Image (cartoon, rainbow, N blue to C red; front, side, top):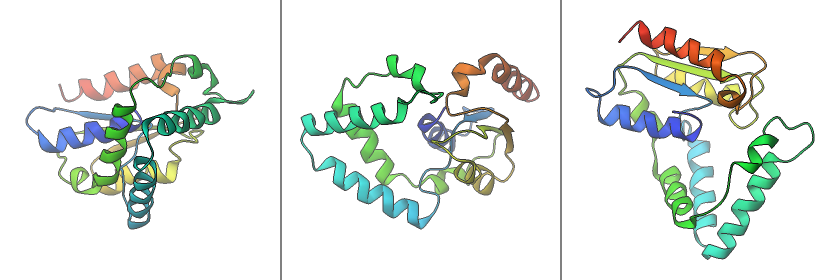
Length: 171
């Protein structure tokens, strides 16, 4: 699972342990790993979900524009790839974030886990990414030097080799 997809992959792995042989998390973290994060995510969700679709659509576009803008921003190439289309999907994601207890899912994972995070990731800083090792104690946590949140796009071949090497030990 990549980024927020890592939370989805973590939840699925915890719910279906016999179906998953290895779990790889890239630029990810354990969602709502501490009480402060839980409070913040629930408050933000309540704030966002009270707005009508057109306001939520506008706000999501603004957030993406700010996140992906800047001359020296390594994420700026992704600006053309990401489009806000279905506001209902965003509402569903927002609701999921506010109710997810990622720590409960994480501690139930028994399969081998590889966590890859970049040391230049501004969306998932290392202190958040390290929550994976805290709750999935048998995980292998690897910091990719010089990599940002979009490392799957910019260092794809390197990551592919790391993932293949890890998974081939267990499959």
